[in-house]
Length: 297
Image (cartoon, rainbow, N blue to C red; front, side, top):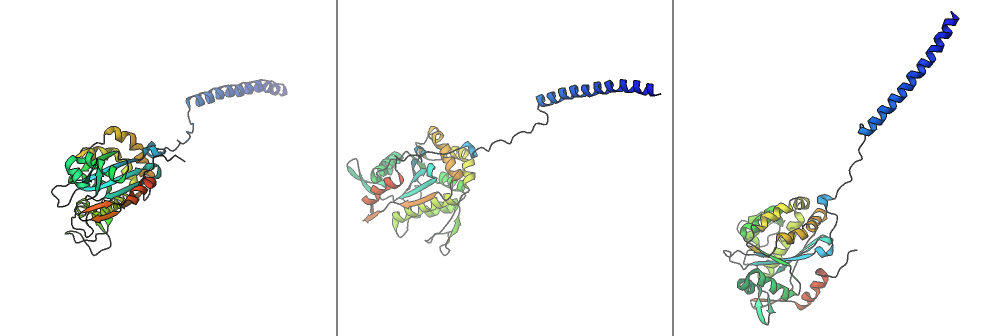
């Protein structure tokens, strides 16, 4: 009996060792195959990407557009606003330019209104460049449909109306204005402070409209909206190549900027029916807003 137990024990031990070694071999092969195939592998979370793939902008992305609202059927003159875009600082400056501004251009005194009526956007740009001493990269002339489309894209504006205009309320501090009401307001010809006041209100309204919009939405839809507007404007020298060079910086500004809209109006004095820009304003404007020699920090 004991001899049989000893024989069984001698047989069982090698048998168990063989099974154990076999399990190790098979298990090792299975583990290697498991790793090779990547089964059960935990993926590291992807690194967050900047919105729209935009990291930053430089001062070289700064640019200036002369915006012109031309509605011949209205009783007012065309409306002129200079827009200075500084994406690096996330600032969008609107400068109202009175249409009755006068300056000496190419040796003769001219008005902005007269220059535009004589030579269109190119002549208006040359006048403003000469009158206030800054470089203007491009111009865009908006008819009523293109202007209202821009206002619709930004979502209108809440703004104070200080004159009696049919369809608008004067007795409230602020009211929401849709695109048609905005058009009616900025083309009103009877402001007490004349073309200076109209230019000031237009620039202020545009800056408020930028500050009140959903800037992330504007950035995300900028390509589509550019294509829409560029096909609606009356005339412009802005090209798709120009847009391609600046669009990432513009999107950066709208993605990360807050309260970036600013507005001013050209300072000066009335002389009869003419507006004469202030020489001190002109000399300070390029230094404060149009410096071309700034370096990135």
